[in-house]
Image 1 (cartoon, rainbow, N blue to C red):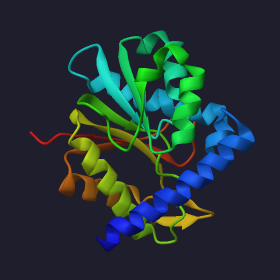
Image 2 (tube, rainbow, N blue to C red):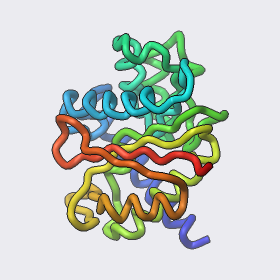
Image 3 (cartoon, one colour):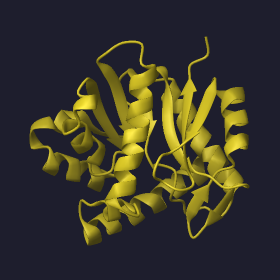
Length: 215
């Protein structure tokens, strides 16, 4: 019960922070705390490439958890390599979902307020979802991440694909979380399923992870 209260408090703080940032910076990479649009797109490409490599069939259905203002859908729509992607965006922040509805007025049904997909998908993706934190305890934030991953795996046929900034030891610095790559893999394999990792091209310190369903 206490842990749920702490997680809910973190989410309230993040909601307020992202709402204010979006109001100040608009529907831009900086509006969701990305360093640049280049790094944002590099991460999208890395995650979607992994999904399309391992998906057992096409088209592939994905849920973009922490979808922000819908930038991943815009990237998919203009990238032929990912044309066989059926997208759904999910975010806990009402302001972000409102921005998605404004940007994609003909596709409002593709966006949902929440923290899990509204229905079963092939893969759940998390692009930068866990980078920003108001916690000062990396272990607690890791617990929160795994609570989110475990919840979403129950709505994923095949697995989860996510990225995290990584460092030799897990830490939180200037409100940015850095995971211990090896420790994350060990925990993911023990708690969820087989896990693989690779460094994200063109994004220093970023690692893309694939966690698949246990067979």
